[in-house]
Amino acid sequence: MKLIRQGSWINYPRATQVLTKLDDLMHQPRTHRMLNMLLVGASGNGKTTLIERYKSLHPVHSTEEGDTRVPVVVMDMPSEPSETRFWSALLNALKIAHRETDPVQRKQSQAVEVLAYVQAKVLVIDEIHNLLHGTALKQRHFLAVMKNLSNQLRLPIVCAGVREAIRALHTDTQLSSRFEAVGLKRWKLDKEFLRLLASFESLTPLAERSRLATPEIAPRIHSMSEGTIGGVAELIKRSAVHALRSGREKIELRDFDEIDWVRLQDYGRQAEAL
Image (cartoon, rainbow, N blue to C red; front, side, top):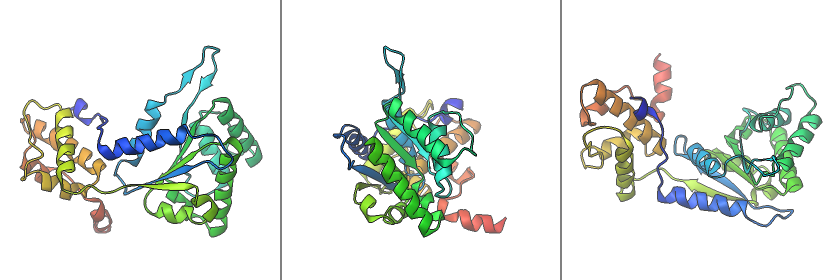
């Protein structure tokens, strides 16, 4: 069961396209106006997994002289657009010790110095939609901080978030014009989705074939997962574990009825009923 719960990277056409775009960003000429990316998708539809995959393809390494290189730096946007919290989050992502109470200028100087030293090629800011939790003034100030950082280091920035992230970046029209919006759409119940299910099945360590791509099972998975790849992955994991506990080596339609599963759109109603 431990093997079932372990995540595995599954390649699919859109993922390949996004990874190629990310590589293009990394290798663009360094200018005072870098091109950036806004990766947009529904919650659970693979944004963070794609980012982690990209980071793993460009790992931290050391030069012959013993210097550390960090090609891809990944951080989470703080829950509100506070500059001091932003620099702390970035320093934490770089694994640099500091005090939360340090002056903003000190943390900024430290972060910029370290980013330059490790020769960061791309900065990824996940959960960028958290920017909307602040006032309009705080949003504009934070976007100016982000723009100045990119300009100073000539560093491309990738922001990732749900659809509201587009509105967040459009607070600064000059900055938003530098960002190419790249979407991760929900999956349709089509041939690509069936191929995705076949890939998941091939990586699920069960002795018998579950035939997840059949007309009986595939629509159920699509409906329960709401067309998100994260939902598909979790649903198949839980169903496989349930099948094993029931003494079977394959997933059957009844497993989807018997597992404890709540669709994202039903979370609110479930919480109100508690």
